[in-house]
Length: 261
Image (cartoon, rainbow, N blue to C red; front, side):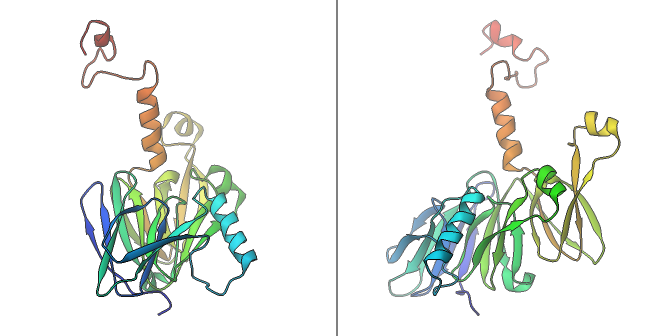
């Protein structure tokens, strides 16, 4: 195998932590700021690159940095290495409520395309790149944008998705229509497109958005019930002036005027 072989254990329910066990000289890469705790003997270093191509030159490193800027991620990836004796553990925490999904890349065709903020950590040797959507309509109306993140490798990778996660296995030609923001990740064999959400009345008053994502098999799709963009939007609306409402009260914010809170 090209990637390091790592063991892991996931703790928690809604705010999960994945604990990765490293043998001596084994390394796991992670997004900057994802580390939760680590045992004595683990060393870490921030690098401009995922380390999947150790012989790459300066231009390749700069290109990698440019791609990470496009996805909105930090230009650095942190490498955690077991420099001690015996097995050591390092843990990474979910950034918001949801699930951490362990992915054995060797079993999924060694390629996974995911939302740009889904990647959490992976065994050294995993390549993190960007995946441009080829069709213009997908780029403009795809909800999370036309730039997604592509993971390549044959080891373990860990991605995070909001809310509950549903795994769907699509047969060749089988179609699944999904809210654009609810797509967490899918394998490389999946065809991804955008279509209009029904007639004009449904588009305007249906509350499901103007467009739906169409996924065509064969392949595996991971769906999230609570995209971070939707969670952030709900919080912003609740925090806006006049946005708060009394829990379970028909009067809503009117109760605040009479000292209800």
